[in-house]
Image (cartoon, rainbow, N blue to C red; front, side):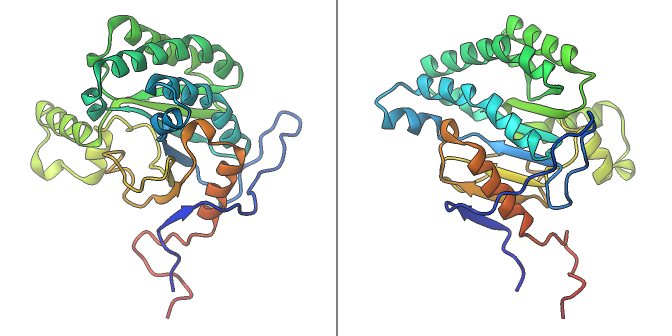
Length: 263
């Protein structure tokens, strides 16, 4: 029997770690550590509701947890981490909540970019920047420029991102560039996506207990493994990281083929 693709994780499992850095040289992670992890950071609102707080308080608590989560994944050898922060559908939320989210993103950039830069993190962005305030766009551009030469880890923030919108944008650019139908391939389409310089995700984690993909990296996640955690994002900690990575390590990834030892 093959290992199931999707699991709901709520109990501890043995941690999966990499050796410590020696002489400034970071070792290659073991083969069972995913190269690229993507996280749907869900549960901020419910975390706040449980405490009698406003939704924006939950979002603020969630952003305050980001640096610790990045460090936990980096220490375990993950080289690329994509965080789903705000979707194209999130504009439908109440206006005060949306305004609060924009302010939180702006203050998070002010607070976190320098420490992340000092830690060797390269920042990337995927999504539709045009819908954002000009000042916020400049902050995002400045953060990307500041960290562009870092190589410890790439952190990609998906803000105002939707996979269907991304695919539509890709097709429009293909048409605008005059690419002939017989020239279009999976590789060509991938080169027109927002993620064209990133590897496809190996593991996608959704926090908060829901089990759906919410229009996130639909093309890129064709062969990703999924782990659904009951932990709300503000409480997502090193133990939750280890649980997810241990679940991933138990999977058999065949990419549509048949395992060598299968009948």
